[in-house]
Length: 133
Ligand SMILES: [Zn+2]
Image (cartoon, rainbow, N blue to C red; front, side):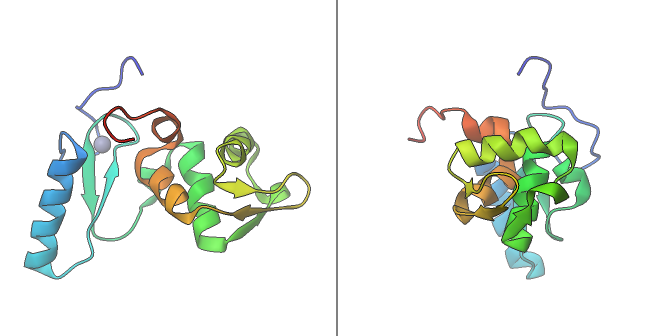
């Protein structure tokens, strides 16, 4: 992932890793009584917080869009998937997060995994995470 950096142009506060983002989210939740979610910046390596669920800017990658659609609708018609997102949909099936082949419906089978994809992106999800086995 050459070229990805911690500096991004989201204009949101940046956290260097998930742990610090989660710590900040826990602090915010106590202060504002809000359900704060952390996610990895789609345009960089930083982490951000959102109190409003996932905003469209956070779903700029195909994998995140498909995962988000599956989580919100449970099943998707392949023909309803944007052509630029179809490859990501096949990857999601290959990773065991959903099942179904065209033209039949695509169904979520691993909601926790899909939630993680929305949070960190499909590329990061598909990568082995050293120390997090
Ligand atoms: Zn960002």
